Figure 1 (cartoon, rainbow, N blue to C red):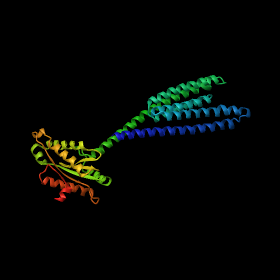
Figure 2: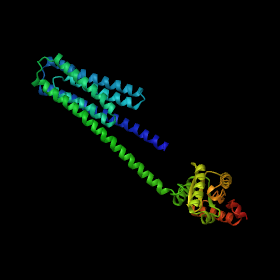
Figure 3: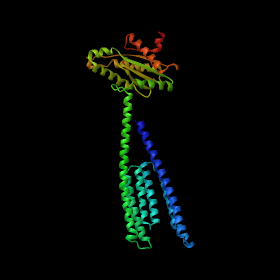
Figure 4: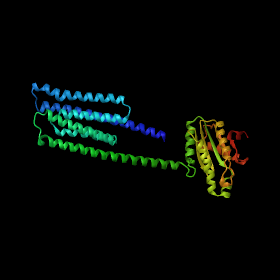
Length: 372
């Protein structure tokens, strides 16, 4: 679970980085388009005279372009310094808002251009943070007001409701509308992500349930064989233990199946305690359990099983008048490469049969059985 969480965080960070790069690339394309459009509009449509050419180049091309480059440069420097992703996102939309302000003040005679402040507001929907959207709205309103003031102060013509303020009010309404719509997008995105995660989590839980025995919550027989096959291919050493509870039928017949289930769960819990990346435990079926030891010697595996056997034999069950229960175990290891996973398991099963037939409550190793 911890690995999945870290992986999810890493994916989220990579996604935010990709979004920021994509947005900046889009802005670059827009600025280049605006740059050539303005050149075409001023020089082709209006056919500027030579004496006014230099003034237009400085005011409408060189100056705003230099400011935009400076804003972009400052942003990229800050992005390299700042470590927190949320601050990087805020810095980016602030820089974009500043670029928008630069464009609106450059072309202040076009009140409809004020709608460009919708752009940074819409961008915040990609990060699904309402706080970020609220901050950008605040910046947009300030920059909108600054543009209006700039137009009033520098305009050579008198601004009236008909020729300027009516369009400016429409632009402001569009900005507020974009803010409201962005909040709807964020709510939808959050809800969609929540539903997707819940569905994915539920599917994972169902898949995990299919892999496990419902009573003991250990892996089932199929997963045991699949895991054994993988271990035999990937590990240098593999050992398999097969455990069978002694006289389990007597326990069920004498004390009932509910008490028998308690015995099974008790042993299963003890097997879970020894489980790790190198030890996989499973319920093979009935009162039988199986264990896979990865990259462990037969002696190491034997020691673990023997400690478990002794610990289990010391457990007193109140439901059985404080009587104890034992188990027998067959163990095999250092498998030949010619064996299949089923054949390898059968070696441990043969050792278990010998243990059951010769006194029970013991662990028998298949290699020692061969010598006998």
